Length: 454
Image (cartoon, rainbow, N blue to C red):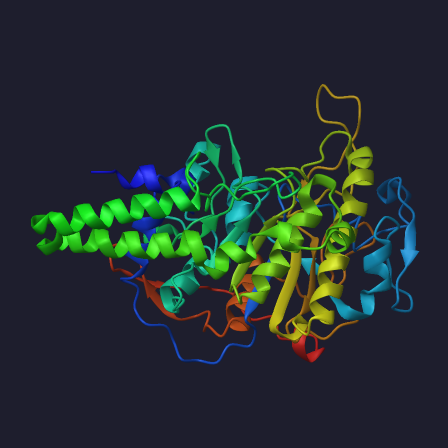
């Protein structure tokens, strides 16, 4: 008898050791979703792993000589509002964006700070080491994982896709990337692979190496024949379960909407060029647009490898490369969604786990200065999904060190994402031991939609 691992590449939870068919079987146990109407159909979370510099992006301080840095500022389409001079496209589209300049929290650690941003909840404390903060089933669920639990898709697809890779460094796996205490059956799909590569195939949903669809069809027929000939397998609960899992996994791999959405090769070259190819940013965001078209609830786009935006060293030379590529990709996404009539049903946000220090200084033993971890004040960009464009919400002091208006916490960002997707952020959900947990402790950022400061 063929083992299922011969047929299916490890699926969405590849680094958790959960196979695609096993995950599909588990998802079948999810309780029916809420009938509550959704405000948006998709959220695209553009994540700057490592913490993008707010001062060198959306909250420049040109009058503060010790803070300003190397970049000039540029006038946006909003009178009196400036962005970094490297964000030309977003500056032109500022009337369609809302920038929250008063994001703030007190956690300068990458892993736990990322957990807070990617789940909307503070990570439970298990110790101070990085190992203590690595991915754990005691963590809170990612946004899409909670949606999978509360409102599973009828087509069997997950409710969150993460692109283009999981956030892993050595033995450390960044928390906030799976379903946490909800259990593995709600884990998002981690779709690994470089969308810039020629003949790109997402490895998490690809067939096993050397196994074509035609050969898979042959193996499926053989499995069917073997199953029919083995009465014991057919009549046993485990046998029936295996058959159902096999059918669903086979259907997803060979003919699903998800496989079609991830076929970036179907895009015209002109469209691919429009998004750009630098650092996989642009093509990752193009895949996000394709997933929006299939109404994927949560699409997390990791902009580069883990801690790519952690610019302690060589800060300005790195951002000279990163910012224009990010600018191009986000602008292409926003324009594309608008042209296709999808912008109102899609909430797009760009944020890191924190910002960077106002002070520019070298690390010990380094000669080239940079900016360092700074959770006390940073910025988040929002667009689409009913958000009122042309807003600058919140202010920081003259060096960008602390908010001078009401701060917004990552928990509030989480509450806003859940609310946008039609989920009450304060509802009670059970953990894997069936203990009641409050989904989120933040407050919806209503000012995004009303323009009235909170």
